[in-house]
Length: 351
Ligand SMILES: C[S@@+](CC[C@H](N)C(=O)[O-])C[C@H]1O[C@@H](n2cnc3c(N)ncnc32)[C@H](O)[C@@H]1O
Image (cartoon, rainbow, N blue to C red):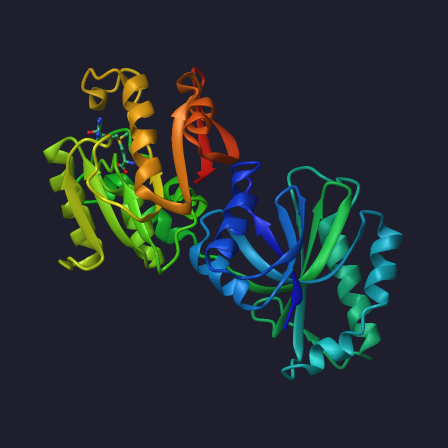
């Protein structure tokens, strides 16, 4: 059964959350259509399992809702739309007797509307329509109606799932047994792994694996993973981190000590990676332009056709030209400001 849903996305990046959600659906072969983007909102049509996958895997989603309507952010328009909904039908399903209405404002949109007023007024319309046969329960309602004010629109629906992001914080790099400074945090690692279209059936590779942050996230999705690094200390440390989360199983993870330009493998489904750059000691005084170019050539032979590569680098590496010259197709680039003098580009390519 195809239904309309909307996702409330995190505001920590403008384009990554939408791309992450669409990549999850594609990687799990879940058909979806009619995707429409608003600031921190993605509306789409798909089967109910799309929400199960997104809520389990996404790092940049706050909640998943069933879509009921979208209208202009004018009070009259909002109330007219609410009055036209058949709440009796919605509540009859699963025998629900209590409700609450919550309204969230994205950033500073629609400041002329007070969300508390909107919550109260919508609640009143619902109670009136049902002749007061339904009660408000703000703590534990049977059904939570959720409205979002974003851009010039009001989007209304039923909240179905809340995404718990605390586990990402618990996996912070400095809380793992082996820590090395400069490691990308688990939220961005997970997003990058999702962008490379990992699924529980895939074989994932991080050829500059460092402390294993990407490998941990891919393993949690259910993929089998291979990590490699030129530095034995990193290979050992990464192994220690994976053992910490997944025990001593050789089935789901494996490691190589070696150069990312000469990996003796084939038929990898997905690569996501964060090579060293700048003055970091992990560049080991190599000519990193040359390393990146040769790594791309190697990954083009490792990756299966239609496989995805996601890579984070600063602009100076001209990764798009390099990858396209080798035959990769650019899917999307996301710009991420790390600090004042450093912007990282997360690029996604398809072979
Ligand atoms: C920025 S770190 C990767 C961090 C990683 N994402 C993590 O979660 O810890 C880059 C890694 O690339 C490794 N490296 C440097 N040159 C390499 C090469 N030519 N081949 C493979 N690994 C290399 C370094 O030893 C370092 O561990």
